[in-house]
Image 1 (spheres, rainbow, N blue to C red):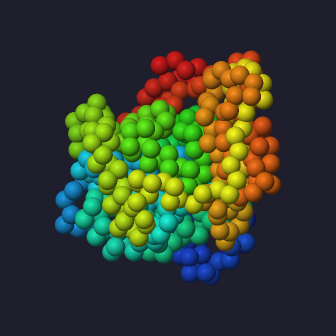
Image 2 (cartoon, protein in one colour; image 1 turned 135 degrees about the horizontal axis):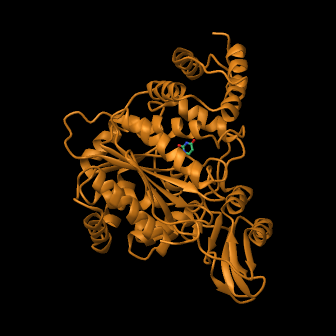
Image 3 (tube, rainbow, N blue to C red; image 1 turned 135 degrees about the vertical axis):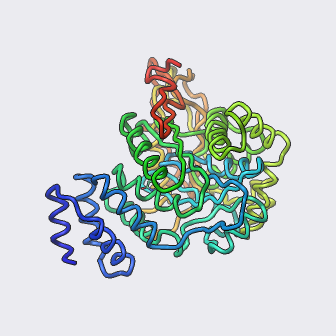
Length: 447
Ligand code: URA
């Protein structure tokens, strides 16, 4: 294979053949194609897109670069949820144990932080001892035993995506619908699922900010799932402000524990229940979403969901006492309150700025090999549309030291805008299925 010609062909708007994609991905995974050539090709895909045939071939090649979770002889329905990435999005931490507590197995495979967004694996690893690198054998055994495993992409699962994902993160090639779709679906199709629910983010903090592109991404992924034996449903949800209040790894684990205890912020709980209800209905565990929601609420109110989370933590080497005592989580060296700069209405809480600030504070990766500080981040207690008075506490900054507090303060001055007016856009705007797109709420907040 002559890689420079393939790059040029793609750069100039041509399509590579399924065989080109298969060999390219196999050779990249075998270290026969260097990162610099793959980066150039990714950039060409970023600008030129992929045909449907190329997208299918790329996804299959990434999926086939590794092994799959096999559930032969295991009769329980299996569901997972995947989000396209956001700031403060700790839904997976709540959802996996909640759904598992309702009799649906959740073999949840997640990724690390990408760009300005946080990753579920990084959040889980904030829990002292928690091991996300389960082998497929261990994952299956754990799913059979306690109904849930929360793992990362071990070398066995879509290794091509594992490397491409890290490469895209540092080469400005994240925000591409075909690359995101192939990345997510190559992992999800390896999980041996009965059904998949996709949370596709829209708004300024999303990889697909425009609602139309978010819907297109949802349809693209659903199409890949349906044609490969994995029924999928998607909700398009707001990422023009952080989800919940906590942003940063330890802080988000703590908020997830609050949610599993029934005390989570309203938007986080709303979205978690909405996605969980889709999961239960999709795999036939309940008749409709109303019944599904009641089952999920019961799993929380009876303490079963929190107990399941504790069992997952224990099974994966983490300290389960964290569910009773979140102070076990890594704690920031310096904490400071952030106050409203003026009286008015919050018009923006910019997730990208907050995500970038977490990176500046040491909580994200600048290069593929960086280690992250799980303790840093923000708790933002206001949303767009909230009225605030000058000097009222509206956030807290968690940093390593005084310099981090100064950087965090400057970031919040940019991220949180207090003006004359502002409004909260609807949390869930579209429901996308293989049959079509339902508009649940318009951009003005109607519905
Ligand atoms: N999540 C993924 O798994 N892959 C992407 O490309 C973006 C978000």
